[in-house]
Length: 357
Ligand code: SAH
Image 1 (cartoon, rainbow, N blue to C red):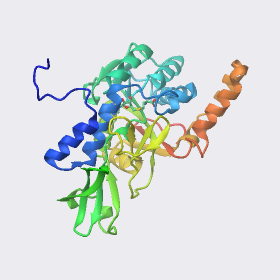
Image 2 (image 1 turned 90 degrees about the vertical axis):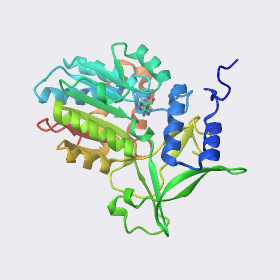
Image 3 (image 1 turned 60 degrees about the vertical axis):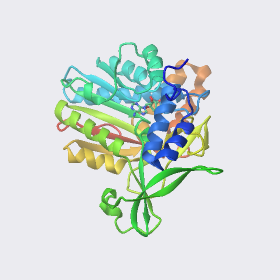
Image 4 (image 1 turned 135 degrees about the vertical axis):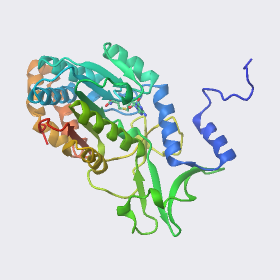
């Protein structure tokens, strides 16, 4: 017998929770919808890999994590080998990127403490097996305050919930999610004025224009920038995104390697939005942190020598040569991950320029 009859079942589908919430309180913000949907989605399972919902660069090839490790080690060596060093990864998934990066850093003489920022208990369990020496944190605030930080985030910022605003005849309104019988969840314009939250460069937009901001991503970039400024270090943030401000919704949902309707089954598909790298660079510069550049993943990996690394791996394992070449092409080709994905490099004041930017 359940101790309290009114308590919500922990396994109640999120769609049912949202329906009840909306019926009682009215429409919820899209930011609320996306945040809770992703929290539920990641908490419950390991979504990565061919049998999951989507695949990420570190899961495609070890070369991705290895080159990130080499980039970080090169920065650290040219900064004069300061210590003790903290490797900090945001949303490390299966721990694959960290394992590959730590291995190549060790070969360069760089031994670090390892800190994982991870919200999902299901993925934490996978990470323990991959990188047992890691320490886990709910956010950056508990990472040690002494010693340089080498911060990495691959496909982390895109999972954080966006706020969307739409220009109506009455001014900017927040995009909300309502529920309608027969239609399901639908996006609507809210009724409260949101003009104060619209970035000034969008003030004169035409009616119907939609803009996205990502308050959670902005907060993370501020924290990263402040850590770099006070402790030294460098950061690499890799995501699919845009380098100049743009308008329009970029919300999408992926399930079983196919795009699905983001409003169809909240909590059961991965919701993402493109990352606004112009915003991220502005925030870093506002804290006197060096923006080393934002370039396409293809250009960055080529500059770091992925072609040479692929050839070396193929020479060691000739029977895997064609798989190695196709994985490399998947990471760098313009019609695959090479163009849409961007790599942003940040460095502490006084730290060197980074390779590939
Ligand atoms: N970086 C990995 C995984 C990307 S998936 C890779 O490239 O394979 C997104 C990761 O971010 C997952 O590990 C997910 O659990 C984590 N995550 C998403 N939202 C988070 C949040 N708000 N706080 C901490 N981790 C989060």
